[in-house]
Length: 217
Image (cartoon, rainbow, N blue to C red; front, side):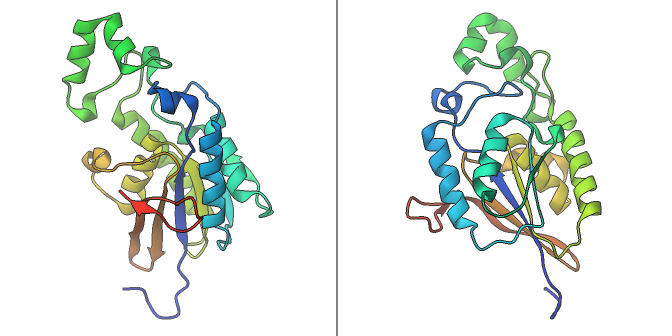
């Protein structure tokens, strides 16, 4: 229950818009890829969806697809986008730029062994595992929580992996809940602060073409 008279703030978590690699099923990781036109349209719809918000700050992964998405959303707000490499997607190492089929074709036996691992233990060759991603996103989260009042609204534009990690950190969930969430391109999730902690208010909403609220996965 929210205490009467207590001003609540929210974390608005947005996954970047679609890229050509998303469309083609290629693994991004830390390799950059620009938004395609559909991705830019997604972010323009997101900007309309969030037009009434008054963000105290806007943060984004330093990868171009997240930075471009954030800038589209906050254009005209008078809020600059602060980038942070801790918000990057998983590093997928040697698999970045490949489709899963291409990664498997390189070494089918090694691919099968990795894919058979428990989700928390999985890592692509020379890539990150879940614990490593959670560690750096938790580091970002702790910095930002300390920097802002709970009543402030904050925008964060990032990737599927880093948004999952933010949910775990903000809601105080066990790390093994990380893989329980779906995060679509161009989606919005909202975490609301209140005196006793935080609650998940909205998850994986994709604004519809009319500019209103869309579906939630």
